[in-house]
Length: 380
Picture (cartoon, rainbow, N blue to C red):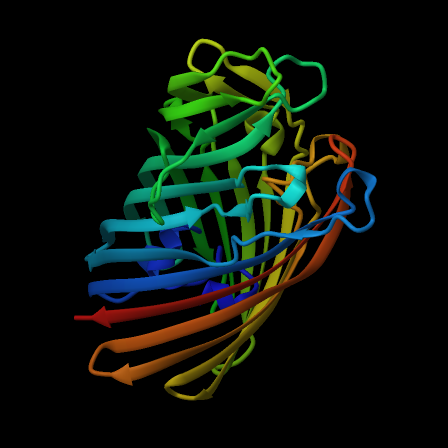
């Protein structure tokens, strides 16, 4: 539902997805049970152009489709709503074949975050609802890349820390986070919502991999454990408003703040005990979201929205393996109450191409993105 409305979700009942948005809105529903299944298909279109200043060196990433499933169950009983949800929160990657980027080896990244969420929402009265939530969080990562192990500015080794799984990574770490939420119904037409998501506390990601020296490099080969130290999802907070213009039309708008400067100041990775630290210096990011829903019939809703967030990645640390530079998303969605407790919702988000020049390594990155979402829910 929120996916079709530009991501705006803080101040109205966005379904079981409220566990990722504002869990206090779980208390807005009628008594009963809700079971949900969902699938998100993320389709990035990433290219590394003008590599090392060569205008003919343009390479497209083969990482163009990532599947992110979800399952959830929420029960509303009296003034309480509670349950669980399992969702692939996000992540993506890039894939460049051997021969690309002046490398004899494949280079790729694949990052994923998964949450198992346990919300408890409480409807204090007809106007106010509050919530607290505990999240178990798992982070996974694959990396295959050329590396400068001697620090002389030239690649002298190839690092391979990767597995063959589409839903996991060779390196992984587990931890916890929490969320708080509130929702207030000002009057029949207007409501506001607010939420706070803590920074995750995930253990260092670890896994097995290799370092292969590139002749005539004196770098010793290595086969053993690798580690990524203190890689976290950022602290996030937001506020939103919803306006029921009429029985058919609802408008919503949110502002969300992600504190990347704390969680993405550095990236520390390498053979365990010999990790190297690369500055990242990401900026904090403000996301502006706006959307609307119109009921064309009592059972069919059309949705549309837009969101914008300035790219947080500085030119000086932009890496072709992690080009998180998209800024705008245009969204469309549809919802259908089939009857008998069954509902379907689908959305499409399109992010037009963003372009950025990296000064870390001479390259121009482009990144566009299409995201499909579909959810089935059963109320009983």
